[in-house]
View 1 (cartoon, rainbow, N blue to C red):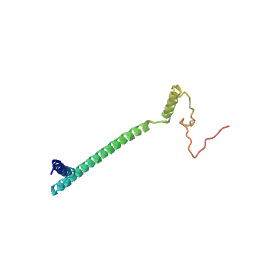
View 2 (cartoon, rainbow, N blue to C red):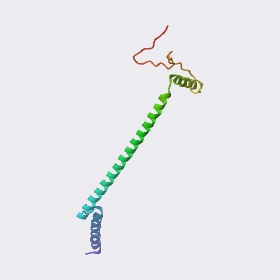
View 3 (tube, one colour):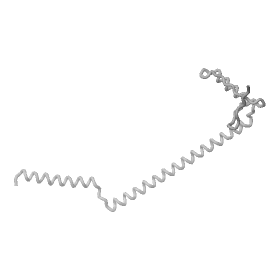
View 4 (cartoon, rainbow, N blue to C red):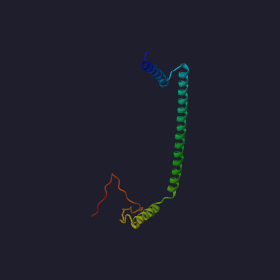
Length: 135
């Protein structure tokens, strides 16, 4: 054999060995131990996901409780306002709002709203009634 052919054979043998070693690292061998470890890891991951979901449920319940407490506060505030809300005060607030519109630099148009002669509150026509037109 010539030196060239011996070198080619050695090169080929080295390439085969390198290929086998590369395949060993690229494709893991699954033994019973590895399969058990993978199954245990899946169980651990599932347990962590369950804990995360439970935490998200607790957070959602806390958010709902916060919204509920806010609604109780709003209701109590509205009840307190409703105790002192009189037609005269509503008329005063309407006058103040119209004055603010008239004096603001953004919208200087004054809006005249028909009011009820008995209560002084704004008259808002409903869909069932049509406004009366006077000649």
